[in-house]
Image (cartoon, rainbow, N blue to C red; front, side, top):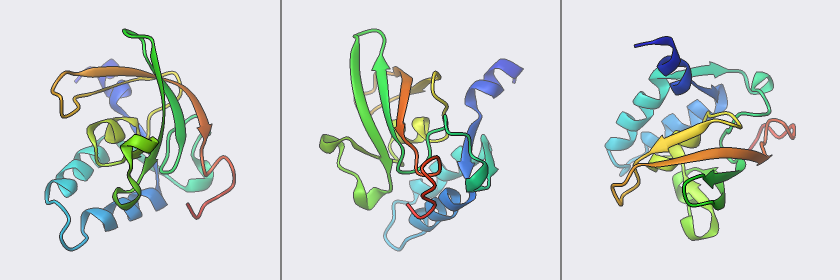
Length: 140
């Protein structure tokens, strides 16, 4: 693996987010693939204390504006845990392909994921409108 690829795929997660993600993946009745998705995410993650996460990183419950540079379309998503997900309202399930790509990414980065439609998408993170840790909210 070259350095460029490794840097591109590195994401930053808070200890609290990791603990909560593990809890959701291990819940009775949870899809067994959630643990596999989480394991894959953790393999490329740098885990830091919530007080040390940079303000330009998407964390759980962060709201970000993204752009599809190919179509010019803009969208605003909040990354949420599965029980709070509502794609139509902009609340993106963290365990969706887009949610996993977005979590831990930095403003200005391009995320790549394959949605259920099967056509790979690339979106640029234009702005982080809200990040709980930057707002000194460590309970969200």
